[in-house]
Picture 1 (cartoon, rainbow, N blue to C red):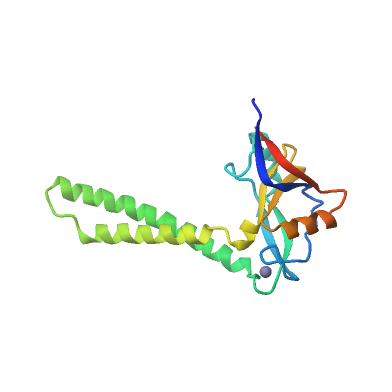
Picture 2: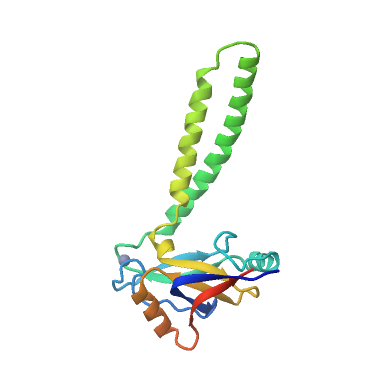
Length: 190
Ligand SMILES: [Zn+2]
């Protein structure tokens, strides 16, 4: 296995997963924050250079870790609502894919027997694109997720690397997690 280094222009922070204490300022705008919000620290292959199968199994057995952060009044949004709309999208996608397959089959048999394609086919295709578009929008990470990014975990799932959009937030974070947090400018990719 060859290790490749990934460099960051601004330093990122390495911290124990259980140790991280997030400062009471908003990671999006830097204002005073007292609304708790959650970030899901579930590793995705694309965003997690230290991802491997063993670690994945361990994480799955522990369940994805949620990080408790604080955001300001303006950036506070209940993520329960978002969870529901994600569920609806997932269900919607499933139904639409079945409908699409069905519509393609019917359109195929129409073509085969020389009939014009039924308008319902176009309707199904259109709704499919609509649902997919909506899902992309719903699953798109909000401002919170882009202000604090979980870059990855170590193999033992003990430490994680966090990237903060705001440098003042990063400084506060390192200050409040003194002795536990470490600034790093590169990580090894497996
Ligand atoms: Zn804010």
